[in-house]
Amino acid sequence: MVAMAIVVVSFAAILIRLCTVPTAIIAAYRLGFSSLILLPFFVWKGRGCGVGLRQVGLCSVAGVFLALHFLFWIESLKLTTVANSVMLVTTSPVFAAVFAWAVLRERIGRKTLIAIALCIVGSLIIGTGGVDPGSENLRGNIFAVLGAAAFGAQFVIARSLRQTMGFLEYVFITYTAAAIILVGFALFRGHTFTGFEPVNYLWLLLLALGPQVFGHSTLNWALKYLPAPKVAVSVLGEPIGAAILAWVFFSEVPNYGLFVGGALILYGVYLALTERPGR
Image 1 (tube, rainbow, N blue to C red):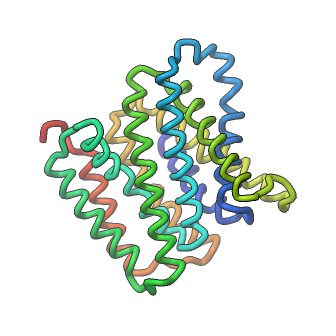
Image 2 (image 1 turned 60 degrees about the horizontal axis):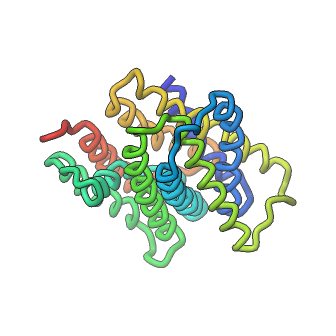
C-alpha cells in the first residue's frame, strides 16, 4: 500500500503541470475536493463530537500553513522543472525538525544537524546550479523551499494534535480550513472558479482523489502498521518518480546539479528521519 501511495503521489506534479488555471485555483480545488470526498466518512463515523475549540483553532493554523505550502509549491512548478521543485520540497522533514526544536523544545541530535547541513548544501546546488540569478527558474526553486518550510510547520502542529485527535478528524478539519483560506485568497486575487477548459476539472479531481486523499491518507494509515521513520523515508521515492514522469511527459531531462544536490538532500533527509531519540 505504501509503494502504491508513493506512485500515486508522484503524479501530483504532473497533474498540476497539466492544469492551465491559476495557482490559487488549483490549490483551492485540490483541498476543496478533498474535503468534500472526506465529508461523508466524517459524518458517517460521527467524528468531531469530541473536538474542542482549541483543537479546531490549531487545525485552522495548520490549515494556514498547508495552504501556504500548496501556493508556494504549485507556483514553483510553473517556474522551474518538476524534478527541481519536488526534490527541494522534499526537505520539509528537516524544516520540521528545526521548528520542533524552536517551538516544542525538542532536542536536535548530531545526525539531524548533519542532515540540515547536507540539505542546505544540496538545495544551494540545485537552486543555483547553472541558473541565472534573475531567472524564473531560480524563483521557482526558492518557492519550492518556502513550500517545504510551510509543510514542515504544518507537520509540527499535526504531530502535536495527533496525540489527542484521530486521523480523520485532523485531516478533515485541516483540509477544510485550508480550502476556505485558499478560496478566499483566490477571490481576493480576482480569480473565478469556472470558465476553464473542461479537462482542467478532470485533472483537479484526479489530483484530489489520487495524491491527496489516497496518497497522503494511505501513508498516514500505514503508520498504524509500520514504524514512522520507515514510512517517512519511503516518501523519498516521490522525487525519483516525479522526475521520471516529467522526463516522459514533458521531456525534462534532469541536469547534473539535480543528481549531486538531490543525492545530498535525500541522504540528509534519511539521516534526520532515522535518528533515534537522545542521540
